[in-house]
Image (cartoon, rainbow, N blue to C red; front, side):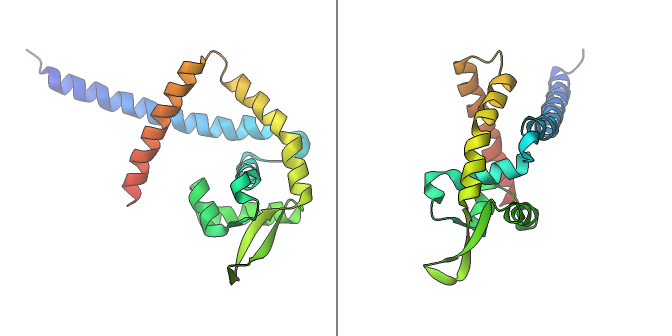
Length: 158
């Protein structure tokens, strides 16, 4: 008789492989379709995430680059290129941190606030289109499971 524990372990590994491959595909597709949704404004998904982070009330006085990296869970190297482009477009600026004059804080400019206001309805429309068929409860459950997965991944960094 076949050992069922081996079959279950094999099925579990295959299921995990499919989950992570779907996450990979979803992330890549989100970058393509999200950027396409905002193409008339020339904003990429990476730029949208930074603009969104800086548009929050908690970031009204800007954010230190390290804090922004931690919030977005990206490396400083990856963030620098996005910040350079946003700065050249006039959407962000680096201001001296009043608490530590040696440090800079990244802040939305009035032009950055204006572009954020313009793209927000498109972003919400994108969310609605991509979450079609998900009930409110499905969305809550999905977020719960994504948070659990993310927390497990963060533990691996330590």
